[in-house]
Length: 293
Image (cartoon, rainbow, N blue to C red; front, side, top):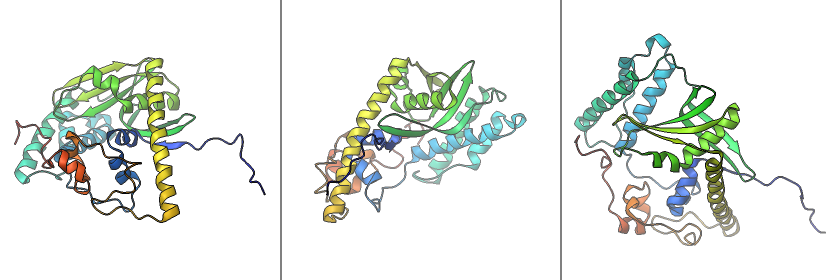
C-alpha cells in the first residue's frame, strides 16, 4: 500500500543559535563534538579570558537589576568582586590582578551610564523564525532610544573593535531582527561596547543588510541540518558509536576538520590530531593582554 504524503504540511524548522551557526562555519568537526556527540567529548581546561568576560557581564546584568538609587559605579565594582570567576588563571595572584583590572573597567563603564535610563531588556532572550530556521539568542542589553531599539553587546577581549566588526556580526543582526519582531519596533542599530578601551563600535543596518544576514543564517543552517540528518541516519542504521579520541571515521565526510591557527584555542583539541598538528595548545590564560601578567 502506498504511503500517504503530507503535502502542504509545514517544513520542519532548524532550531539554532548564532553560536551554533558560527561553530559550523569555524569547524564542522567541532560542531559535531559540541552539538551531536553524546556524551560530549571531554573539553580542555577553561579559559581565563572567558572568566573575565562572564564576570563583567554578570556584574553589569546585576547592576541593572538593582533599585535605581543603588546603581552607583561602586556598586558595579562590588558586584564584580562578589561574583568573580577564577577558572583558567595561572595562579591566585594572576586571578587577583585581573579581578582588580576587571573591577576598574566595570566601575569606569558604569560611571558613564544613566542609572535611570532603564533598558528594555538585560540578558534578554529573543527568538524569531523564517521558513527554514527557528533562531534564538540572548542580548546583553536592549535599549530603547526614541522610537527605535538598539542592541548592545559587551566585549572584554584584548582587541579594540571597529564598525566592521559590528557590521559583520551575524549574531547582532539576528538579535536586531528578532528584537524588532518580538517588540514590534524598528531595530537597526547594533553596538559593541569594548570595556577595556571604552570604545563603542556602531553599525546602522538597513532592511536589506539585515535580510542578507538572515539569508546567510539560512544557508549555514541548511548545511548544518543536512549534516545533522546524515549523522542521525548513520547512527540509527548502523549503530555506529561515537568516535573514540582521535578516531573520527566515518564522520569526516560529513564533518571535516578545518585546521588552522584557531585550533590552539579549541576546547576539543585533545580529540583532534589535525588540530594539534595545525597549532600548539594555548595556555588557559594566553588570551589575556600581556601588559598584565
